[in-house]
Image (cartoon, rainbow, N blue to C red):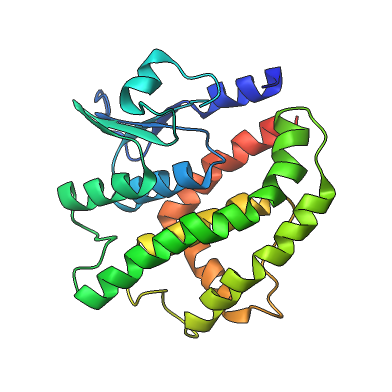
Length: 239
């Protein structure tokens, strides 16, 4: 990892959320701020108005503290007092059980099943398909100082068309993916933002409902809170 990337990780550290004066936040989120998975947990925390420390963590150079909460070195890691867990979906499930309002995993059976399915589809279909876009055009050249392979990025742009068409097809003209705003919306929005670091954007001509949905997500206060912090980190990374 380049010196600039290490500096950016340090800039990410600090408290996020409505901190009470003199109070040390009991929760810590470990991960690189540009990760879709780390962002998913951060947005969920912000949606619930919870305080947390964002502990910059590089899975390639894990600290002892990070490995205590993420024994397999995966991001994000999360700690709430003595409890720790290291998967973005598991973090959201924990938060929803302990801090139920507002709910991010719907209670109604069909809506719950759909929200969890959408989260899984993003994590296991869309992100793997689109990862080369951000890897080859951003992470390798900007963060790691290595040349990217444009042909892999172009192939990934084609690979994401099938999942994007699915999400476009299930969206209405307004509202959210599974009726209520949920973990599925957060997961999809976070993945699109990460892919966007590779210079890709949702084509409003071919995916008008998806583009409008993305604007609705980005208008939410919790999203803007996390995005503002991330933007300052990204600006520093670009130098």
